[in-house]
Length: 135
Image (cartoon, rainbow, N blue to C red; front, top):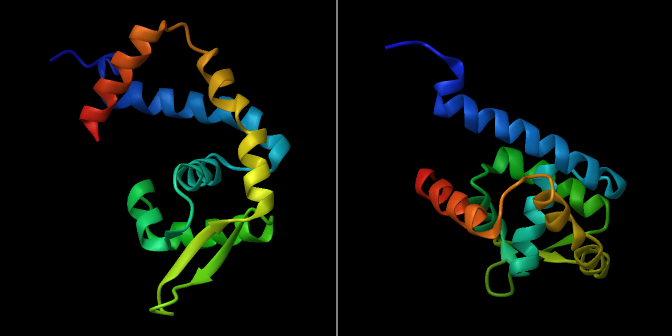
């Protein structure tokens, strides 16, 4: 086997992850959001009022990462914690009014990110399909 870093799939994925998070940083900085906070909000934009457990599973984040992240989003006024009606031990996360406003303000981000890549629609869909296979 010839060792070549550029031929390593893991390196290509790692390099792309670093590049895309840098690009996102430029668009999210005006909102004082990290990439992880942004994708957490996206999950809530998809479906509001989710349990912390469900959020963690959807984002593939453990509670040690998710809890401080949610506290930051709560301190910024984007989300609130709500105790379960039938079981107060269960905690749900809801978007606040400010979080709903942010949903509209962030609509340009995915489009701007897509413009950083020279992929046509068919290539982008194929890349998504291939990446889903690796999860």
